[in-house]
Length: 342
Image 1 (cartoon, rainbow, N blue to C red):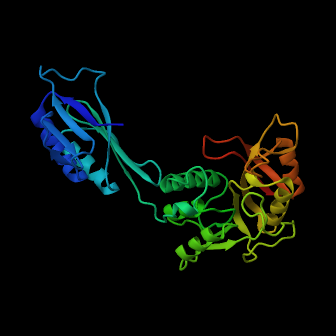
Image 2 (cartoon, one colour; image 1 turned 135 degrees about the vertical axis):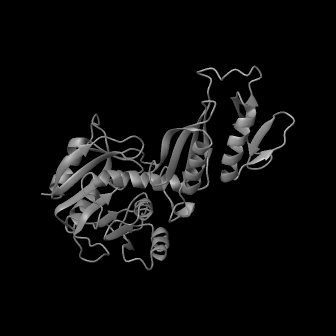
Image 3 (cartoon, rainbow, N blue to C red; image 1 turned 90 degrees about the vertical axis):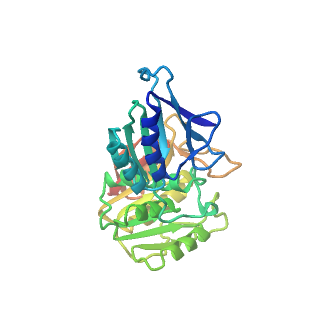
């Protein structure tokens, strides 16, 4: 781990004037040190940012310049530090901008040519307690929201979110969090999940917001709800008789056997219209001999793996046509299908 960071300067007085102003905005302060002429930290004992003069007075050699990213508290602080640095003689590199809806960054060069990055993370508009979150990012709520925003970017390639009615089967929390984070562009979002405690939390969180509705589905699942009722193609969902513009199932079919996969695809067909786009993820194994494999029988349906031709057959038999079939995308999503009504 980092104890402290040292950058060299050919003019200590000028560098002190420059960084005194910047750290004053970010909440850092100059700290006394027997070891260094100038150091900054949030508090004594925290990793320090150190200025050290080149005794020879020579400029910092090319290739030895530092690249350092400084954490700011807010988007406004990033902008203020950036503007102040340029006013004090820094040179621009990358103007302040959102990298996604959760991270705001900028970068510049100080007078010695060191590259200084600035970043701030926007607070999650709807924090969800860790005990209610699932998935690979359950320990980091902001990372989970960021991944939800990236999933929405994928969805929007096929259907606009603006004023859309969205049906999210097996919703978890991240898509609702992501929609709320980007300003609630949808007309109505229906989130359905078997996890009753999470649904109750979401219902209370959006109690007075007509753009969101959440319901518990009672269906059996060997992994998540072993005592639930069996799902059939004729099963009904606990929502109004709507026709969604977008239907999503992220990390749902990845935990379904073939019978339940056909059942849920058949159910969702009744909530779609000709222009609806259904987007769902699944585990596909092209070299798999069996059409379907429950990867770990000791933990039923932890990884439900399908041979691609068998999954295509299930989709077709349930009354959907495949618009697009896509490979996994980084660590964000498994194989995913985009479908429309046949």
